Length: 267
Image (cartoon, rainbow, N blue to C red):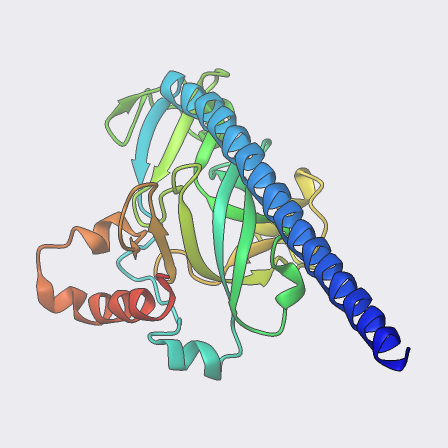
């Protein structure tokens, strides 16, 4: 009788373990199904947003501008090591949508919805999987806002009516808006300003009811923002002027930095 009892208990144990394994497999399959469903929803949302935004841009008058002047001076990391030393928050994300900001005189900014796929550097792992807002330069604006203090009927080679509500698309060739659906890598900081901050950027944020420390912006989007379009194999520097510079001596550091970014994070 003793042997039979042991046999029965052992048999039940095997059945119990098999049941647990089946339940674990089912949970994993369910999690995979939910993830696949979420990815499909995001893909459809991005496609819809891209179609809508591209249609708005197509109707607007495109004006090329540059945000790097001949006397401009910038300080920015030039390697991943420098990112680490600066304790940068470096993220890889997907551009989900754009929304224009209004009432901004003599400039243009855009609210970008970015799904953070991975926090590459920094102690903000809690942001992974979340959608945050980045403020990027350029985008859609009204002629009467962008050209508020001008009377000329031409701007950067484009015919304009500075006192009308015609739509303009301000294309900063040093910091162009990445395509909706593309992947980006950049270091970001909170947008911060106080009551005494009277800069044009701070005023633009106030006018659009964007509170301090609620959204982010790239530290130096002209130099430390990389983009990989859908279907592309590698990230490229987002700055069109630097990327298309024919003088390799002027691009040596950017080329090496971009290679380092791809080697480390293009996975």
